[in-house]
Image 1 (cartoon, rainbow, N blue to C red):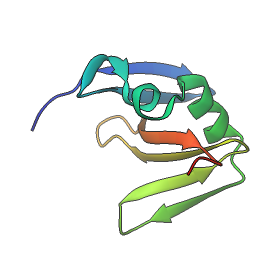
Image 2 (tube, rainbow, N blue to C red):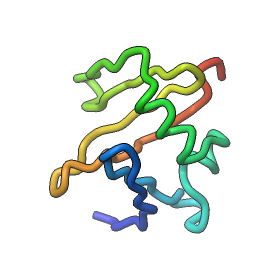
Image 3 (cartoon, rainbow, N blue to C red):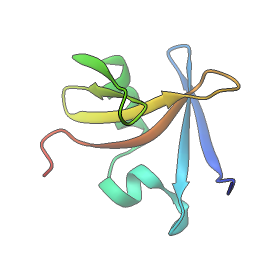
Image 4 (cartoon, rainbow, N blue to C red):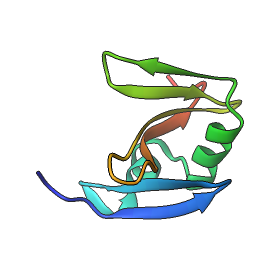
Length: 91
């Protein structure tokens, strides 16, 4: 298993883990792949219209006003592991 560095931020009583992209280890995955920011993730998480569990992908899928967030919980500290976040209306 390859260990990846993460940016850890706290907001609203939650701890969020944002991983850096393997292709660009100094840039967050969500920023490099989708142009989104930690602020976008936090807004989607707390402003969610709905969150559904996708058992096939083993992840939560949260739709905020402007972004869709895929996430799960970290096994050791129950923090929010950000899988990805993209604009809700992106193709």
